[in-house]
Length: 255
Image (cartoon, rainbow, N blue to C red):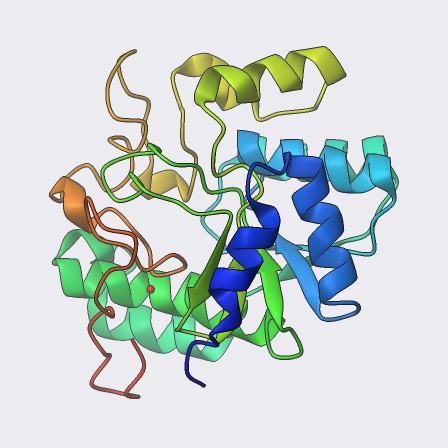
């Protein structure tokens, strides 16, 4: 599917709109065809709170790669209890994970950029695509300035990978504003944030970073900054839309 001309129209309609209004707009414009993909990060917890508070018809799902921190699983439970909402969990194909590990080893992501991207593709991108099959749009917690690959984020974008609108209600927020909201509304968050983790993904691929460093410098820290994306958001450093990730020669699919 090619990018629709109406993306510019969506941006015009959302100009200067607060995050809550952007979420309401998404639920109204794409009724029954929009969902929120949460990574359980700080921004995503803010969006979960907003969706719950406004009782918006935006289903919420997350991806379990099988390599998450225990603290992330604890947060899933606390979030479900706090907001009394279903949180659908998508898992990677067990057969594909087994085949990948048999070929490259359990920690193949250390071997090369290609193998790291293959691991992300198998554990994240493919489950995401299954979750997106019946959607016209998906909601994300991306912000501008959120690391080298996220300098420019718009409230609405065209995601060429799945052929969907991507809605970013917090595009104009800064980190201080996110924390202010979390504290003001007592939003549950991952305790690892208090231990120097600004961005939290799979345990083997995420570490704490010194205060003041790039917020994504703790993700895949052995790679150069412009490569620190998993394929869920195909972006390059300093640009709003990056080139496609390399394909897996085994199945022709590009994480």
